[in-house]
Every structure is written in C-alpha cells, then in structure tokens.
Amino acid sequence: MTVPERPASAVQWARVFIRPALGNGGTAVDATAGNGQDTVFLAEGVGPEGRVYSLDIQEEALSKTRLLVSGRGLSERVKTILGGHQLLDRLVVAPVDAVMFNLGYLPGGSRAVVTAPDTTAAGIKAALSIIRPGGRISIVVYTGHPGAVEESSAVGDLLSGLEEREFSVQRMVFWNSRKKSPEIYFVTRAGDKK
Image 1 (spheres, rainbow, N blue to C red):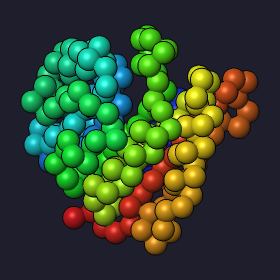
Image 2: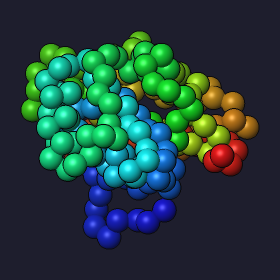
Image 3: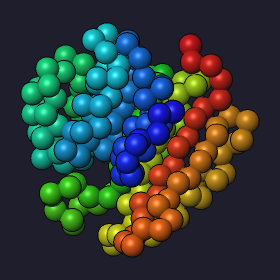
Image 4: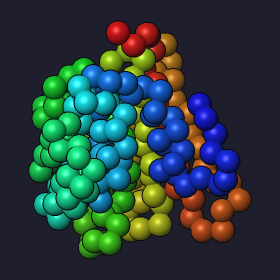
C-alpha cells in the first residue's frame, strides 16, 4: 500500500486500500455514486476489459456520474443503476473485486437525503456476499449529519461480528481532527484472488 506523501482525506485512504484489488478485466462497485469520483477511480483501475457498477438512489447523482465518466472516456466500462446499495447483490454480476461505500449525503445535494442504518447494513451484507476471495471493501462513514451516529453504530456492530477466518476488518479515524472525523473501514475477504 502506497502511503500518501501529504495528509490524505478519508476517500484518498479508501482508494489506497482498494487499488491493489483492481486490475484489467476486474469488476467493481461504487455503492454510493455521489458525484462520480469513486466511479472514475474504479473504472480506471479495472481497465478497458473491466466493468464498474455505479449505484445511487438519486438520479441527480447518476447524472453527475455519467457526465464525469463520459468526460474521461470511460462510459463503456461503467453501468449506472438507479437503486439502493441494499440491492447490489441483485443488481450486479458477481463475484466482484472491490466495493466502495461513502455514506452520508450527496456532496452539493440535499442534506435531507442521507444513507440510513438499515439500508446501509443490508448493503454491506450484500457486498460481503458477492466479494471474491482476496477482494476488498472500503466503507467511509461520515459522522456529522443527523442519523450518522446510529449508522456508525450499525456499521461497527455488523463488521465486528464477521468471522475472523473469512474477513479481516480494520478501522481508521483521524484521531487529532478538530471536527468530527469520518470513520474508515477496510474489509478484505480471505483467500487469493482468482
């Protein structure tokens, strides 16, 4: 894992973790498309033969994602899906190499539309069910919006209960942050990538 030379954001750390799971011909999921930045990162990582599924419950997010992906010439690698991440095991072709979650609200969008503990837990369970051996899942939990404490607890409780022989889970926070630090979870499924 290449450590950034300067202080990195939660999203940058998630990408550092996810990058080794990607390769030409791979399959990845952006479980919360947002503005499309992670979708572009994943599409570049899976190469011309790969596939990225980009999900969001807001058409606004998918429109921004499609525009960004198109501008980078990556449209052939990306399929956008209007739907919640709790359905990703039904909406994507498994198995997958990597899944990225950025929880909270759409940056620049309405703060009234946020991810929720129950659908987030269901989405993470769905991701765990489709990740291939050696695959990786990153989960960035933002903690400054209403409902975030409950969502953080749901994520932590779910991940702490995973079978240690099947999944490795690490948690990172920015300990000396002056504002509410996002929590970042790094999940790796045991086994060698096939």
